[in-house]
Length: 195
Image (cartoon, rainbow, N blue to C red; front, side, top):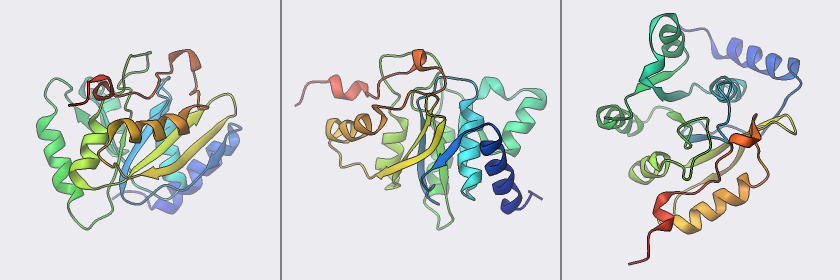
């Protein structure tokens, strides 16, 4: 049996304050919650703390390579879902089926896919939102201001460039814990010529 959410909520809020951070915004009960900038190994704990502080029970896609031994047990107990990036289909199909139910569903995805600087974000969050109709909550970590939380919610319009312009505008002043690792919010699809 899992611990009641009020205990997790109190623990998360206490730890956020104890480390000198402040919390901003409200986590949606249902949707895709992206966590960005993803610049540190601490980002998983930070996004978990944001969700718990808001009374939410998130599921978090994490590379299957992290699920060995005790670490794997902890990840699963806190909502971690192993994702084989080489063959993500089965996991994504299960999540899409779960999202189609009436139960609250909150999936956390780090669109950068890795803590290092990249050319593009991975499009999974955008595709899942488009397939399910779930809104995208813009979760953030900003080390320089010691602020973390949730910004606006985006419902994709189908115009990738327009939607990502909104995402870029929101994240323009968010730096993450290690700003030098930040990847500019951009999907490879934006670079494709219009047809």
